[in-house]
Image (cartoon, rainbow, N blue to C red; front, top):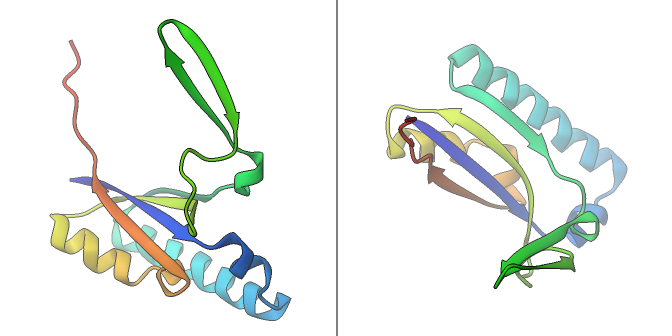
Length: 118
């Protein structure tokens, strides 16, 4: 089964890290990604640009509305994702608990809904 693991963190806290600490965490992230790859769980992953680069699009009554920034005002922002393959939700949660960004924020684990093609 496929799962999307959404990485949330406070951008200000990440930006405030000393360069050496940030580089060490990124080294862990890259090593973990390689470990997922070797174990057969890895499908894709990527960090996201800061929320100041985001736009939210809504269509209501046929009219398009575009707002700068993310959809929700929260302390934590969506910072990246891992797209993984796991036996079940318990294995996906176990894998998410090993993701280095979990120590700086949170990881939301969501099963991918399979949609049958017509």
